[in-house]
Image 1: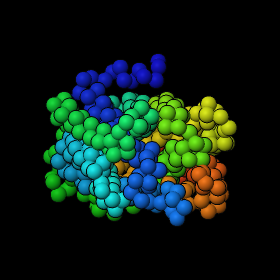
Image 2 (image 1 turned 90 degrees about the vertical axis):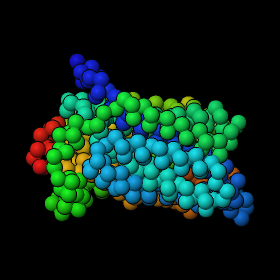
Image 3 (image 1 turned 120 degrees about the vertical axis):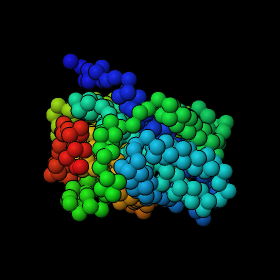
Length: 427
C-alpha cells in the first residue's frame, strides 16, 4: 500500500475540495514570495538606501514583516465568516482580495504606499489558509488527512517555486512592478471554486446549530485557553522556522554570493522541490507514526543540514543543502494542516487553525528583519555583500529547530479524531 493509496478512494466532490485548498495556498504563496526576490530592486527604485547608496535590506524587509503582521486580522475575519456562513464564500473572497492588492502593489508610487498595500494584502491572504484547509480536511476521509495535509501545505513551496521561475525567466523583461502584475492571476481560481466546489459536509451537518452558538471564538477560548496558547506558540516557532530559512535566502544568494537572477532561480527551485517532496512524504508518514514524532524527526535532521545549507562553497552544493533543509522544514510543515484541524474545537474549525497559525506569524513577523539586522551588526562584510547573511541564518536556525522540537514534543495530539461526529456533540 503506497502513501498515495488514500487519495485513490476520493470521490469527485472530495477531489475538488482538495484541489481548491491546494491551489488557493499555492497561489497565495506565489503572490507572497514575489516580493522576496525583488527587495534589492524595490530599495533602489523607491529610495530605500543607506548613505553609501547600498540597499537598506532591513528597512525594505518591512514589506515582508507587515504582511505577516496583518495576516491574523484576515484569519479572524474570514475564519469567523467561515464558521457562520460556510467555507466557500470566504475562501473565494480571500483569493479575490489578495489578487487585487497584489496587482495594486505594482502601481505603488512610493515605499510608504507599497507598505500600506502589503498590509491590506496581508489581511486578504491571512484568510485563505485556515478556511481552505478546513474545507478540504472536513470533506476528506480521516485516513487521507496525512497525505492531504502534506500536499496542501506544500502548495506554499509550490507557490515559492513558481515565483522563482517567474523571477528567473521574466524579471529582466517586466521588472519588479511587472512581477506584481503577474500576481493578479490567482483571481481566476475563484471562477472554478464557484462552479465546481461544494460546501464542507461537516459544516452543512452543523447548520442546525443556532447562529449565536456556532463559531463563538471567545467562548471557545474561555473553555480551552491552554489549547490556544499551545497552538499559537507552536505556530510562532513553526513560522520562524519557515520564514527564517526562506525569506532572506534569495537575498543571501544575490547579495552575498553574487548569483545572477537565473542562478538564484535554479537554487530556489531546487530548494522548493525538496520542500514539496518532504512535505508530501512526511505528511503522509505522520498518519502512521504520529504528528509529534514526525515534527521532532524533521527538527533533528534539519538541524544536521545547517552547515551545507548556507556554508557550501559551490552553487551545486548550495542547491543540495537548500534541498535538504527545506525537505525537513516543510516536511514538518506538512503535518500542520491535519494537526491543527484535529486539535481544533469543532465549532470554530473555520477560525481556530488559521487564527492560531497567523497569530504565530504575528509573533515572528520580524524574522527576516531580525536576521538582516543580526547579520549586519554581528557579521559585517565590505560592500556589496555588507553582511554575512549565511552565518547569521545558521546560528538562528539552530536555535529555532530546538524550540520547535521542545514545543511540539510537550504538546497534545489527536491524530485520526472524527470530524463527522463533532458537530452533533457541539450542538
